[in-house]
Length: 328
Image (cartoon, rainbow, N blue to C red; front, top):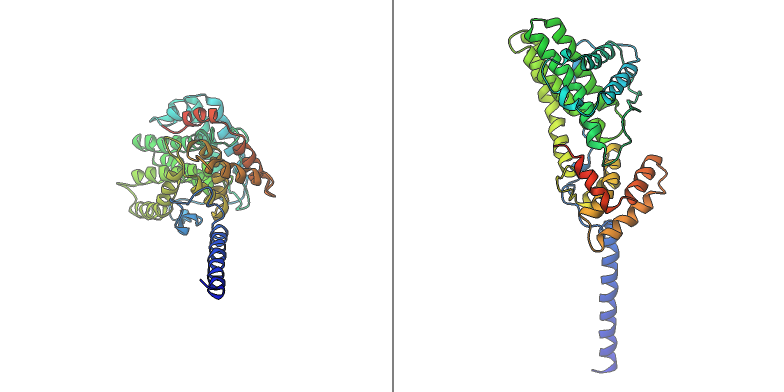
């Protein structure tokens, strides 16, 4: 090889090396979370779009005006939390008005249903435990169980021939669920409970009008079809998080935390990365997750910063408590 040929070879080698470095840099820039892994369940950008649920409830029920509904709603949740460990189980039984404690919660729901609620009002229930992977499913279960009281009361009243009372309870449950979804605090537990509660109330409505008012039966059927468009997407997305073995893809959680259009799901991604760092992330993934969480502790969003700090400091031994509180 002469000097000129050697020079050309050297240039070619240098170009190849530069291109390789650039390629690696571009790859890292294009997906800065690649040390955490590649998203699977959230790879499709459509998974990160905000799931809206807009129902014309006025087709089925009278819509209240004014404001103040958040007050009896807070009282209903407080009563539910004071009920005890069997609340969710008891709330899912027929004839809830035979139980004075459950009846008191229903009274609060029906009271709230006669009051309006502004679009800017947030339902934030201070009597609930602080949100975390250890408490999320308990919170969702409590809020959903409140809706079951109204649904079962509606069916019981209808069975006893009290159509007006059945409609009153169904209406209270439907407004509760819809408002939870629309006005609930920006956490998946609130929104998911709202989705499930709307389903419960529409089920009660279809049962109520099955052999009665044909116009309202058609309205209930149509609302249920519209609800399913959002509900099915929510159930599908929740399945990304709800894993019995807690093995949640860390890259999917990172993708939610960074790119989801819904604030509730961004918070969800951060919160559950604290679990995934111990159940899914191994080798270089775990320090990458921990570095990412540590960076978020300095977020200008105080809720994200708080959730990130709590996630970052989760320990392996916390996983038993998280698993224990998953829905059965």
